Length: 485
Figure 1 (spheres, rainbow, N blue to C red):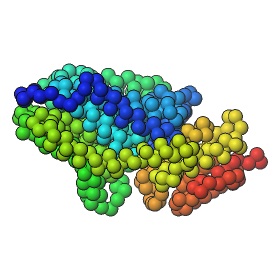
Figure 2: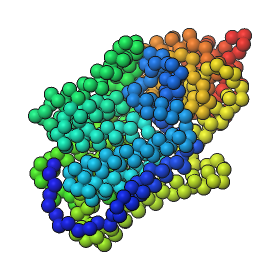
Figure 3: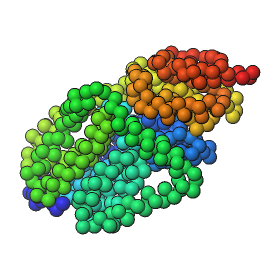
Figure 4: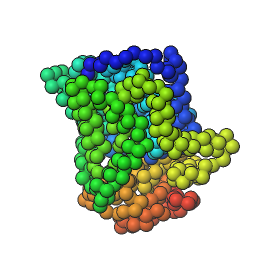
């Protein structure tokens, strides 16, 4: 994409001061330091097991690509300030990559605008989507890096970062498709770069004995998951979620629309392909989870950076007024939560926010277990409550450490449904599971969905006779293995 000539006019960006705004936005997530969100706790717990010398896929079940756990190794698998600081630094890195890409496409002003837009929209949206660094958020940096090198026509590096992306999230395949279409004449180099990280990690899987587990847990399990629709009306759900996301991101939509007339034919098709394939990734599986839309954020932010910059140059007062109005909705809708959480932190009181009720319950359960446990005790959590491992600092006793592979019901529906996506595999896994003997068992699913309680399965009912109830929370039943068992 080549830059299009426009009338140069100074923009309201102080030299380097805008980085202070980026850092400030990124650091707002520090008020979440005492909380964990869904999925990030899973990767934190996986990092704990890795640090204890266990190999993912071989020694413990892990149905996500490996680099998700590697990220959390950087904080030792701990929650708290260090975790949120790491997340903030990651956001700053993503903003730097956005800056470099937009600057390479058009100029410094567009680069600054792109960085500010990314910082804003990775802060002011649904917390479950932008606070936890699960696979979708972690894909942001490889996404920007791959597209940046594809734009520079450095095909090998573009392929390399597509490979890194695939080791974070399978949806990086859509980024690879964008790069391939941009670099049709350099596909061999692109594929060579792609192969480098994938072959290196595959070799490690093979020699460590983790390859069969990786295939079963990530690829086969992921395919089964993607084929099982969680709703009977995916089109209606998608329409509602897409409309909601576009509404909160109206500034990006408006900016990208304003940019279109100034783009060359080549620019239009390249950005059009990037947006279209990124939207296809959002639609994959027909779930339209809020975090999935992070795949669409990079192309829209880059396109919008051009439109916003042009608008500021043409009529600064009008552009600032319109942009302020468009940004006000997400700022007001999501900004107040940072303020209330900060107030709760300063007052040393527990937040009453319903969205974090389960996490707070997990903290209570972990505290109760900690008061009873002895060094070396192990834990199994029935339900998708990996935060209990993180808060208790306890490890699983065997391959399985949550209920999903044992019930066959994914976590995104097991609170309200009980239909397995793979009954045979789940039954086989239960037969393996009953050979384990953790010191503590937490049923964090039965109180919420009795149809999937531990004692709802005959083989587990017999296994559970070794345990007795020693404590309860509102959402958990805590068992301890009897000495006589």
